[in-house]
Image (cartoon, rainbow, N blue to C red):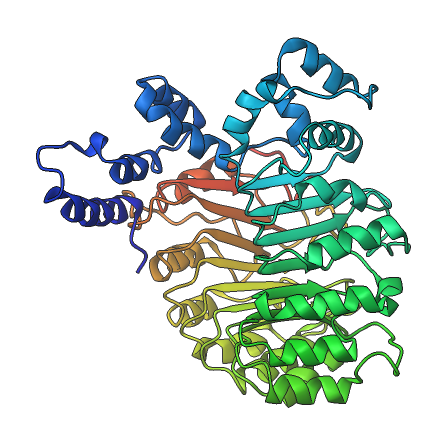
Length: 520
């Protein structure tokens, strides 16, 4: 059962106190840096941390370091930090025109103070950032902008990946790159500047998580220098996700021998060059026989290919994430689940989503497909997004049976064609589904660690009577989303949900009943 924040705090405080009590007799909690940092970590808002930073100078560094660890810069960190320089310098940086301008070392004092705290940033807005990064880097050659950066998420528009160079601090452990393009999986055209950035990424000495999955780099697979650099990096990677490079023979051979790689993404749906890439049968053989540390596997391909791959690989996995190209109906899901559960007993995460809605979802019920997962008692995350109807949805009895076997469940999603156009129902159409709010009570009872619950086709018309709140021990906020469900009595539904969880967000935005008045 999940230990709530108060219990965890008490345990950590007792441990830290006992470890320092004999060394520093007579001191208070606030005099011991480790304990003070622990106390601050439980403050819920930046305002509280700012207030604490203002109490005394000796508290400022600890409080500000938590605020600035993951700052919300909306994708342009340097533009937001320009005000840390003197007014004249700030104006030039924001104006973005004088490329010859240089900043004196003494003007960096405030910037460096805060930049040293930053561990995680998002970079989306290349034009203003590229200019400011160029000025700052040219003013102090060889000095990194964020010397202790751990992770970065880079969003690029077109071929502007080269703007990321100044942010690729050697301390990075996690890096994710997206290219924001109108079409899916945009192809990055070959260029010397992008090649240089990819080389810089592949040479990061401490990088452990590399995610290039949302972008295609087929032209770069023929670049021997890049492939060599990637192969050199592979022994240090814990997670690797890319639509390209992965199945290149030399790359996959190196991945299969890694003793650290725990998570891998495989795009099996693309047509590949046989002389450069492994065929599917070879990929299956290597995945079955090698990869000594592999625990999490994500696959992008059609349903039948995914079933075949999982069935023939036949290995124990903790996480399976299936991204099915095309539609998927319950019969196909049943085959996929069976392919996983035949070889795995300790599954913790199962995700399966389709890229297109099915014209005919069929008649088989979801319980037929999900029943084998009832044997996965360690399951924590279940995500299903595919085509199914209200009559195929789980019933209250199904929920009771499944969740009784899943005491550690944290996120549970069963959504029918999320994002697809929802029909507008009328008062004459049937409103009852087999899944009711009673099932929500059952889920709350069996899954005390629940954080997210997304369900389609829930009968919200009858609200069970709960005389008084029956909260779980958790203080975490639970997110609940109802889709393709009738919610014209929202106020009463909220009242019911608020008696089950202390903190909850309830979303009806995807409710499909639009012709009846709603009571908010």
